[in-house]
Structures are given as C-alpha cells and as structure tokens.
Amino acid sequence: MERQAGSNIDFNNIIVARTNVLHDIQGDKIACPKGTILIGCSDGDRFWDMYNHHCEICNHTRNHPLSLNGGALLISKRSPIRGARADGNTLLRHAHLAVSKKGFRTIILYVHTPCLVANTYDLDFLEVLRLLIEAKMRLRSCRGMSEVKMYCFFHVDYEHKKRTYFVARDPAIEFLASHGRPVREQ
Image (cartoon, rainbow, N blue to C red; front, side, top):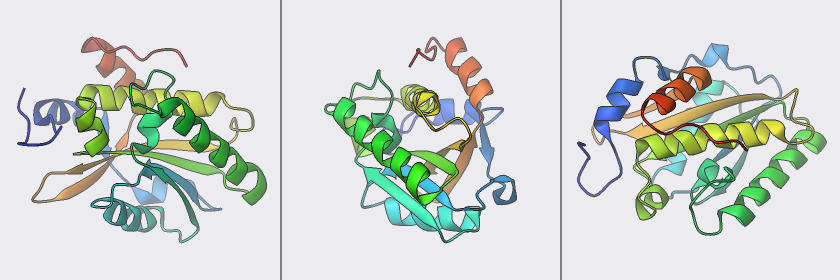
C-alpha cells in the first residue's frame, strides 16, 4: 500500500475510488438555497482552505460550521476515536438545532486526508470513507432530518494540489464491501 510519508494518504485506493466513488464537485448541483451546515474537522492547517473552498462551491455565504477534531468521523456509532460517542452526539445535537431553529436544509459532511485524528487511530482511506458513509446514515436517521439534503465531501491534500470530491453513497457502499469493509448499521 503506497502512502505519503508521515500521513494516512493511501494513493492507490484514492485512485481506484476516483473511477466511480469520488467525483469532482459541481457546485451548481448542490441544493443549498438557505445555506449549509458544514460538519468537518477543525484541523488548523486545513480548515480555512476547506471552508473557503466550501463557500465557493456552494456559492453561498450563509454557512454554519460545526467543527471538532475528526469532524464527521466522530458521528458513526462504530467510530474508534476516543470520545467519539459524546462528540458525535454533540455534533448531531447542534446540527438538529441549526436545522430546526435556523432553517438550514443542507448538511455537508467533510473528511480530509491527511488527517491527524485518522493517522492517530491508524484509519486508512477505506476506514475514513466507511465512517463518513456511516455518519451520513446516522444523521439521516435522526428526528427532523428526513427533508434535509445531505452530501459527503472528501478533501485531499496531494501536497502539490488540494482537491475536494463529492462521495457517491451507493458506489461507495459497493466499493467498501468489495474491499472487505462493509458499511455497518447505525
């Protein structure tokens, strides 16, 4: 498995996933007339770039960031990250509040690589992708979220360039299952 030195980037799986799981983002296809709730990692080296790019691709300045170390990785009930249960519940509670009280109708879940939290817990690309899909499934099952649009984005820092990809849920689930990482019930 080819990895960038000192990080958790698995270039081989990213390249394979680019065939039908990770897609270039088309901002005009993102439905966010009332703005977005962005659930992402608070990584001080990457958050600003990710957030600025988010505002560009969504073409909206009304964005409500919810950010903790690990971000969307904390929401899956199966997250191995220490404190994920409490932190994931906190993110869910705040997302629900922003939907119910502020009227947001679009949530975008972000993960990124390299990621200190993913690296600390030895989470490879496949596990990060699985936790992202599981986070969306858990969020979707929460009260009041049935009418909310949800998207999963994967931000990759290739060192020489940065890219944010849309994650196609159904192909991601098939891709993960074919690589021995089936998505687990939430």
